[in-house]
Structure formats: C-alpha cells, structure tokens
Amino acid sequence: MSENTGTLAAKAAELDAADELAGRRGLFTLDDTVYLDGNSLGALPRHLPGRLHDVITREWGELRIRSWDESGWWTAPERIGDRIAPLVGAAAGQLVVGDSTSVNVFKAVVAATRLAPGGRDEILVDATTFPTDGYLAQSAARLTGHRIVAVAPADVPAALGPRTAAVLLNHVDFRTGRLHDLPGLTAAAHRVGAPVVWDLCHSAGALPVGLDEHGVDLAVGCTYKYLNGGPGSPAFLYVAERHQAAFDSPLPGWTSHADPFGMAAEYAPADGAVRGRTGTPDILSMLALEASLDVWDGVRIEAVRAKSLALTDFFLECVEAHVPAGRVESVTPSAHAERGSQVSLRCAEAEPVMRELIARGVVGDLRRPDVLRFGFTPLYVGFADAERAARVLAEVLAEIPAGEPGARDAVRVEA
Image (tube, rainbow, N blue to C red):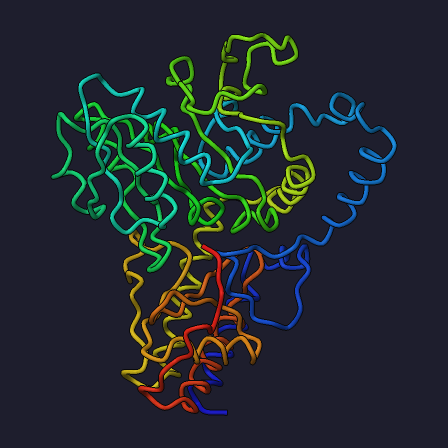
C-alpha cells in the first residue's frame, strides 16, 4: 500500500465514523460493490419486497377492487406527492405523482405556454438538456404554434424577451453534473413575464431545491434515481398553488376530472394539483415508491447536501492522488454552488475503462464518447467507497494504454 493510499484510507475511515447518515446504508440491499450509479437507478430499500408482497397478496389478491378505497389506492398520487414535497422545498398540495418524466414534461411545457401572456411565440429550451426533454419541447411547440430557441442555461437571461412564452431548464446537467442557478434563472424569466419549467431528475433527493422559496412555476422529476423508487417508478409534477386554477393540461384524463366517476362527456378539471393526473394510477410501482420514501424519515435534505459535497470533494482528492496526471479531467465544476451530486471525468478511453471498472466492482456509468460518470447517493455511499473507486480507477488506467479505442457497444445506461 502506498503512503497516499494509506493516508486517504485513514481519512475515509474518519469521515465515515463522523457521518450522521452512515446508519442509513443498512436500510438498503447492498453488497460489497461500490455503487456509484444511483443517479441512474437507486438501490433497493430492504423493506420494499415485504411491502410489495402485501400489496400483491392482500390488497390486490384478497381485497381486490375494494383496495381503491380501503387501501387508499385512489388517493396515492397526491399522498405520495405530499411525501416528496419537503424534499424539493414545496408545501403540501402542489405535487402529484404519476406518468413518466417525459409525459410530465410535455404536460408542463404546454401548460406553461397557456399560462404565459398572449402573443408570445418562443419556448426557450436548455441546449444541453437530456434529449427527451428536447424532443417533447419540440412536439409541444408544434402543437401550440411556438418555435424552439435552444440556449445554454448561462445565456438564458440574455435570450429572454417579450416573445418568450415559456422556459424549460434542467436543474443539474446529466452529463457534467453542473448545477444551474434555479433562483436566478427563475427570477430572470419572471421579469419578462415567462413561466419556467424545471426538470429536477438529477437534483430531487440530492440537494435542496426550494421550489416554493424561489417562486418556481412548474417542475417535474423522476423518482427512480436519488429517491430509490425502483426502475421506471412514476414521476412527479409540481404545479405552484398560484397557478393551479389556470393550469390547463394537454392530457386531461378521467382521473383529473372534478367528478371522475360521473363519467360526464364534457371535461371539468378538478381543483388543485389533482388536475395534473391523467389515467389510472400505476398502483404497483406507485406503492413501491411510497414504501421507498420511508428511508427518508428523519433525514434533513441539508445534511444530504453537506455529505454529497464532502463525498464529491473527497473523491476528486482521491482521483488527484491516485490517477496518473493527464489520464482524466473533471468536467464537473469545482465550486460547490455549481455542483450536483455526481462527478464526471473526461477520459479518452472511457468505454473500456468503465467496462473494466464494473467488472472489478465499481459501478458508474458512461456518457459517450468520453465521459465517466459517478453518482454519489449520500444515503448509502460512504467515503471508503469514494477512495476505493478512485484507487480502482487508477489500477484500470494503468492497465489500459492511453489511446486504446473502446468498443461502441460497451455500456448501456439510463439517464
């Protein structure tokens, strides 16, 4: 063991011993793998299989249709939304859970254009956005007669104007982990009278968001990353209370009707965030998500953020100590105010490197062509994990010559 390795391992042990969130790791089903891909798919909470067994065998198997009332299935979208709300800085009654992030992005963007003053014809979209957000914004623009203006988040204030009908932005860039200025960009859009839709997929459950505090209009987010809801678990839609009466969804399904069981031919929207619902709730995944949120009981999101920054700082310190100079370059900002809960390293040999890291028990993911992405989920990732990941990365790079081409079919990943 080198002097650097011993010193960093000792430091990791000290940091883990002082970690107020360390006990949360035991709430998850984990092995000795260093799992740094919770920004794609969160780990399984240990108690979740038992809860799902009860849902399937008793609520569905025995109570059957009665569970819509007796087990609370019908009200689950709002009930679970209220449990997520504190994690994103929202008061109760403003989040509804259901559908995918993509579907909710479409709802929110179209609804935002309908909230904007008349005569506006531009939708500003984050030029670095996750692709599906861009695809859906383009579809929303075709539907509503607007045009898309793609702009880097930092350039949004200069691009705003009297033609801006709505703005769609990502809170954290999925490639680089850059945290964008939600308060400042929201305020800039409001100065020209434009509502903003924020995509929180890479920030919900990783850091304070402050939706109410910063006057956000609409927001969407997935629940299978830092919220650990399971693969494809339903997303959430935030509609600020001040907009709920005017919120006009382009997908007005029967469950958002003021009297859903009246089966009226004409649509009349329900009050509140309920009008963000569309079809029948996906109960199995919905209730799995609800159970997964139990791991957050008693957790302060500020403590999560503090550990996230400490973890990513320490990982970067270990990378600098272990990895030969010139083999990787961090594309994640060093400034805490600009960093989410991941570290992305540019590496020319990224594909074979990530493939080998996974084979050696360090699971991150890849953003082609050359970005190694490591997500740090503070509820179950520790400082010893960060040190081991950097050390194994150095070992792998020592065995893969610089300039070695990667196979194009290396690693399939989620967002």
